[in-house]
Length: 110
Ligand code: AMP
Ligand code: ZN
Image 1 (cartoon, rainbow, N blue to C red):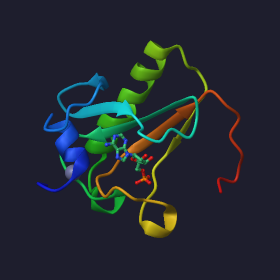
Image 2 (cartoon, helix red, strand yellow):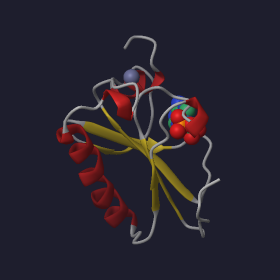
Image 3 (tube, rainbow, N blue to C red):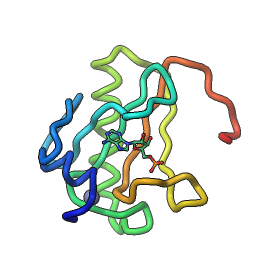
Image 4 (cartoon, rainbow, N blue to C red):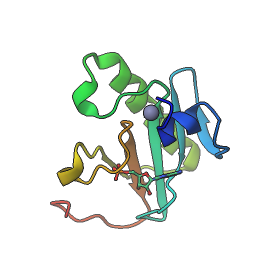
């Protein structure tokens, strides 16, 4: 999508330090971190939200990248979050998984 900021990051139209990249996904640090470690994993292909996902492949690509990245960072405990829709806190409508670590997280999430 031409006006999607995460598509632009994935396409390298916006220069961003990627902490991980493969054929299908990219990961980069969140601009406004909510924990000492806070990065996002996105599929390179545009899906506005989890509601647009109709196969396990995309989620498999995203989630299988997570332990590769956390291992590289030496992290064993972390929280993963997908916000879907405005009331759930989604602000960027290109599906992404938040991965946060380095502090204690409360449950239920606020
Ligand atoms: P959400 O609210 O779940 O849609 O999460 C969107 C996240 O994207 C927020 O945590 C933002 O801080 C983050 N974000 C927005 N623009 C950028 C950007 N250009 N680079 C990195 N993170 C971003
Ligand atoms: Zn996009």
